[in-house]
Length: 273
Image (tube, rainbow, N blue to C red; front, side, top):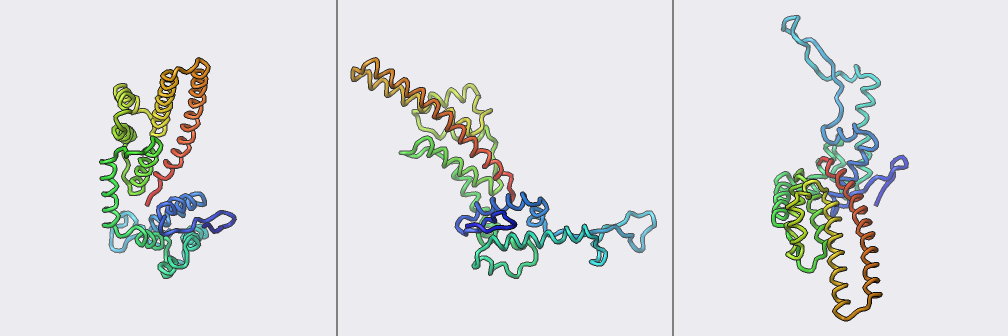
């Protein structure tokens, strides 16, 4: 569900899918004004001024103190108002039940932190959830009946979840983890990649594309062997070879789509909690 803010859709929180909302709302605020993100992370802007300290030598440095409201400039008022603007956006991104929990909040940071605690739990709960994801990462392995795409999607989702909790692994380490998770029929390819060290320079999506191409080649070789065992004609084998060319194009398209998903994942990984 979405609401509109000056023609722009405001993401509305689904408590069961808080992480997605957090990423979308963070990006929504960033796209409107970077200061809005500062409001939810650091709190509202406080206009400051320098003033001399009483009872100290004249050459002592001035101290920075908050301005009186009567001393605010037009620019100060505009900056302070941005927190109200941010609160308004957040309020419009909440359903009635959640809104009732933050109705008495006075700053956008207070709203953001309250929603986070209600959806994620306390800091201790978040730490426990992160440790659980770390364990899943450390023991990640291929599951019986999975396709390469299934394993890749599950691994990528796990990495994204870890990023949301601030746990980011180096690409070469996560690539190696993924290679080691694959079953024994992948050993020739995974050993080759590890021996040449090529995997260290790959994005996870490029690694997936390379493995996908290898998977298609294995399927094509198996198909040709089956045709030959059955005494298939040259024409039929040629047809299989044509299928090989078509599958190569499909693999390229798959890699391209995976790269697009990678760009989105990288934007999320930059999001702060």
